[in-house]
Length: 71
Ligand SMILES: [Zn+2]
Image (cartoon, rainbow, N blue to C red; front, top):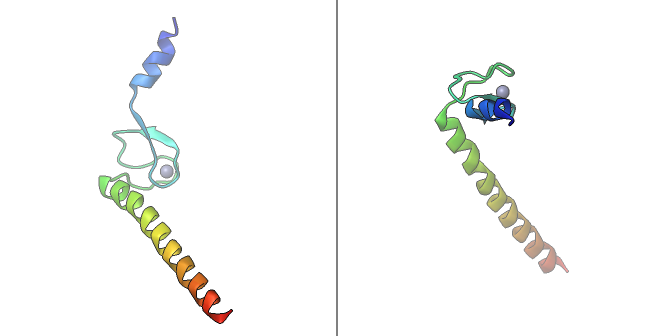
């Protein structure tokens, strides 16, 4: 019985929004990089990823269409 491991999992840990290290879920501040853990940051950090991907995709399409016109 690995009840010790089970107990460790009971301590709710989350990844730091900033450095990605495991910190306690109820910790307001990351002990490693000192960044504050807020729900707002979680939401805003998940959105820009696909926004940037879409922007890059559109830019690539735009660049390809220009190159095709020049040929
Ligand atoms: Zn951190």
